[in-house]
Amino acid sequence: MTPPVSSQVPGADSLTLEAAVALAFRDSPGLRALDARAAALNAKPSQAGALPDPVVSLNAMNLPVNTFDFGQEPMTQLQVSISQSIPFPGKRKLRRTAAKYEARAGAAQAEEQRGALRGLVQSAWWQVFYLDRALEIVAQNQELMRDFIRIAEARYALGSGLQQDLLLAQLELSHLRNREVRLAGRRQSATSELNALLGRSSEYDVTLPRTPPNVRLPELPHKADLLHRAAESRNLLQVHRELLAAADTRLALAERDVYPDIRIAAGYSIRQGTDPLHGSRTDLVSIGLSVSIPLYHSSKQSKAIDERAHEHAQRTLTASNTLRAVEAEIGRSLADYESAREQVLLHEKAIIPQAQQTVASMLAGYQVEEVDFLNVLNGQLALYNAQIHYWEALSTAKRSLAHLAAAVGMETLYE
Figure (cartoon, helix red, strand yellow):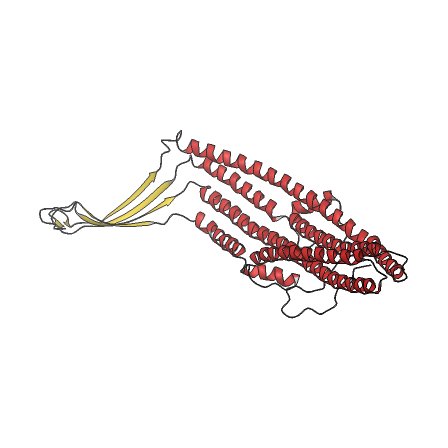
């Protein structure tokens, strides 16, 4: 059976799990920064594939410095020209393709951060929820221990009780107060972490519902199935695939950079004055073609190819290492989840019902003086610890499930 919790309807100001995730998505500065970076990268492909801007020139040519008269010399002319650089065929496409891969990597990285943030928020939320339940159980047991103290005092006053029973109850009440202080400190730390994930001040008050969104702990597929899903769904792996494709394209571009670019130009020259033989001087038209020469290939283009080849190798190794890290992350989270799930089921079906029966039996025996006070106290402590351990195990299982979902690249796993 599930330990009793309050059925109080959470107030409007309580922070549900879904609301916490929504707030994090809306207000997280880190996530907004990655979204902005992805938008910036998405604007690059069209730039990378565009032709260089044409150049328009206005030149006064062969102007005599003694008179600055445009009609004095036949070579003097006012020229308007335009030139356009054209990369070797294929270069623009490769630049555009590499930029597209990098833009897709940027978008995948933003989605990866969104998934990781969801898992972290869910984990932090469940940690605070567990600490709330633990503090609630400690408070309930403090009240129960005060009742024990009153009973022990009354029996001692009547001469039917022992002073040691009273001292034991008072000692355990002090232990409970000490545990409450430690749990309260942990809750303050956990709420600070949750507030940081939500993009707000650590001093912000956090109130959670008193009932969990659900206590379902599904059976999960085998690790191999989860790894297969991660290979298809995990955005982090997609980031490295896109970056590897971009590195491959950059290498192809470096190899093509050994081929020359060309520049074409056309100009119109206006001449003034007259020629004794031909009358008015004729305007002139100029057409030019220039080609870049990779004269320093060994120290420039060849080194660029080496650079891109090493970058490609680095991307390949990084992608492989990331895949191994994802596999380890899935294995670790899956093991944590299965262990915590077994603990939840054990406490729910065996330990807590047995502890409740034990306490009821000992209380009945104590009332007729067949059981001493120490056994009653130990039985109650066993029940109290079992209830706290149940919520701790449930929180651990839910947190592991959130981490596992993020590792696989899914919002939820069979919940």
